[in-house]
Image (cartoon, rainbow, N blue to C red; front, side, top):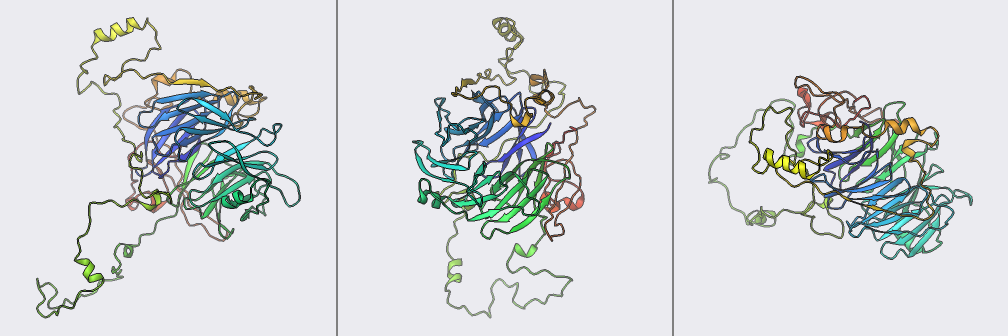
Length: 545
């Protein structure tokens, strides 16, 4: 099993990872355990995006299929089949009915899920269809960029052109747009271009300049020494930092947006190529994927007990304490009662202990309350391996006679889904809609699968093995059956950090049982040699497993 792409939900509580066998694995980021596995596609998953409320996941696979999934049930709501491979998809930040899809060598497509309709977005040059697109922070506008460096800003509802500009290198030469990414907070966005420079712009200035404007970037970020090309870039949760993953090696460069200075370089395993990078929406944690393994980067947590109470004082050695004469008296007879003013008077007021204040980090600047229907966590059912008998007895509806009758009705079709053990009705098959795009080549191969000529061997290796879809669906990470209650162990790297002149602030080691972020970031029990979270497959998926 190899990880190919990852994305956090809006709160950073769940991490979805798309794998090369078509499965989507969802990790609970707090318990450090696998919360759900969705057998989504047959071919490798190349792009993933959460809906705003976290109840839905939209995925794309290398066989040109876009699917919407119900995260709680794992069911597919609907599918869309495109004529060419999908490079990227993105859910609308506010309207959960809209999805932006970027097919290969085609104009971007805006899908409406409720009625399965689609709109092809206008492009600047019909001969240049290498177009990338992204919603802005609130989904009011769609920004598109082509191989000639032209950026178009379109109104999401009307698809009218609102503003445009061209990204140029020092001279009048243009450079291809590789990706456009927006910050979660503020109005800034970045453009990753083929000239190996990351340009940071203010969205308000772009709209003010209007059509054919000439806005100046706030920052230009690049690696002048190695001339590193960038595979994937994104903002930190608060929008103050930018991380870019190198296209040559497993290395992450972090800049401060306001100043433009390089803060740190994080080096992964030598010889590995980076596939994806995602910054946690709320915490200073980065997830990166290379060689099919998800690495979690975080600072080592230093215990600071004085942070728990403002008047707490750490002692290096025992100090003899002298108690006051009246310290443990119920009433201090000698104490004079001064008039209560300010903070003292406030102490006598009733404290509201029932109202829950919204967490500021989870609310947008135009919202006062959290979304209480949001899906932050997934219930985890215990796995029972090879149960000898059903301890609860057969459900009332599932008698052998009823099962035989159903089989007769199905006409002996082996592919008929058997009724589930809890007596629930069989799952309804998802509707598939064919998206027809004019003038789009249909024989394109997704970049993940290699070029047309030598892609056969790679394409054969990708995807789930034949016959494994139904049988091993509930026990996904099992190339071989394991015996005697053994559980497979998955290698995971505990990666620290090293930077220019930084001398390495983290640690590297091996562990089993859960996601790893560093000695203190894993668990309070790290000193006792155990790891927090349930035992089982970890967040590191290595190619050997």
